[in-house]
Image (cartoon, rainbow, N blue to C red; front, top):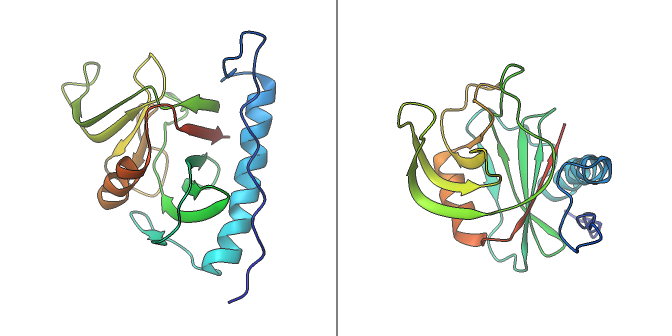
Length: 176
């Protein structure tokens, strides 16, 4: 299959102090633009494959700095390595009562097995923390709809592979 070269996802908007502005209008707009591009790139790279809850696709041999794009509207995660789409997965995000925040976030910490301090010591395998309130990417149950307390749940095998390619400081775009 012939595919066009995917466009580079927008970079995180910066404040006057040089740090990323994660919850600003600009960051949320950039995340939406990145999610729109990721959906187009998925069709170009993986065809019209429809993933069911808990499924993912992953291309080996793609190198470059990792960048994750989360689309809450279609409950999908997209992994770019450099400018190339490398993987796509289904997710389960926060509910209306406990929403997942949107914007652009750096991965602040990683832990192969973490237990939630807020939610009865719930296991969070391959945890990658995105904020100081406990929101993280991690392996978990995927019912095919938003169902978490705000975290982004991933299929276990995808979460393990993603954990292996990201670093503290890697960028995560979360779009509504």
